[in-house]
Length: 414
Image 1 (cartoon, one colour):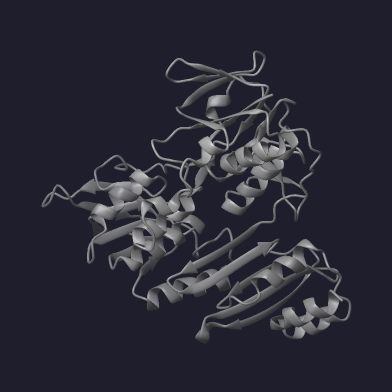
Image 2 (cartoon, one colour):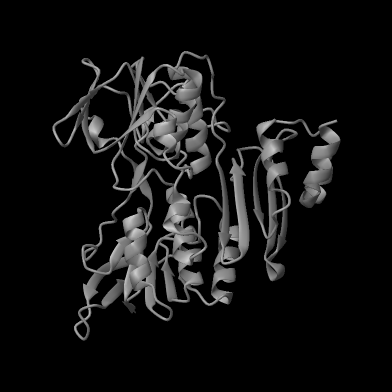
């Protein structure tokens, strides 16, 4: 059996290792598009802060991991997939045949419709090459503008703040991390960042970037409120999109990503998908969604690898879960954090001490949660949601004090 994996991120590498373990005799070929060993994009900000070197981002640290596992690693870009012939076509003109194929091509940064994004000094923070360019420009005291304060933007924010730059964050929505936090929590994150010296502008858009006439190496950032901000560096973090354009003509069912079933199998029985390019089952809603986070990619890769090799391993769905450290403030969101129609919620709001907890209920089960300023209950919250544990009398106790979730979990689990 010849297994081919397109993509060498967390989903692809996990799938390759799983395939080798599940089918020791099969041929495993992994194709990666960057001139680096397979690495984790989520580790890039830690390179910017100096916590790790570039090698610390590598997904497998042992020497010759892929060779020792008899996993063939090919560097190259895939242009198309001929599903009828079971052939992958690369940009260098070569081809790779397969019997089972995994698409694990991840996502790419969105490019907002703003003039000037091609100017020197404007970078995404998505690749190790981006990281090198940002590190060169983000010197202590440099004027830096970060476009976007979503999940990825806040991870980058943390790294830039650690470097001691003069940082301004511009977010189009009315709060920070709008896709994982409600207004109370998102604005608490904003207040925390401002207190730490970061200038945060919400409900504001960048309209244009232009070179400064005084210094060709500097930029001017035009905002829709009429302000103009000088910047030595602009970092763009305005969302991502699945890398599936090369599959045009392959006949795979897709929407925001490649639509897969509970076995991570696409509409073609010989092609699977995993990670940021896969639109899989959402644990909380039962609907199909792209969860572009590394834990989901790893889960997808493991499940896909097992099923490609002949095991029967259904996936219950990925939990929408995000945990952030934003200049020292830990925030987390889980499941249906915005609740359901007719559901109850419990809330404890302490903005003076930057602490917040909100639980969302459907009947006597917790289906979603938000947490700020605490790190000790993240595992408990995830467990309560994923086990769909009935709370019984504990629901009313949590409605009165949502901070009692650890007590509720221990009592209800026994």
